[in-house]
Length: 68
Image (cartoon, rainbow, N blue to C red; front, side, top):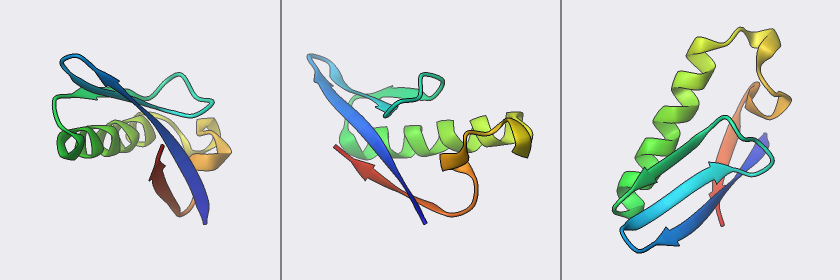
């Protein structure tokens, strides 16, 4: 199982997050709960919009998200 590191940064108006070493998926939210949901949806949409061949290796198969 792949581990996807989600980098979380606190902002004055909430939080932002992105996948470590990947620029295409990011999210912003006012709470951590909302941020986790938003980044999960962003990953899902990214996977839906790309072919299996176009996906980064880390998004293929099973994975778990780790927030740092």
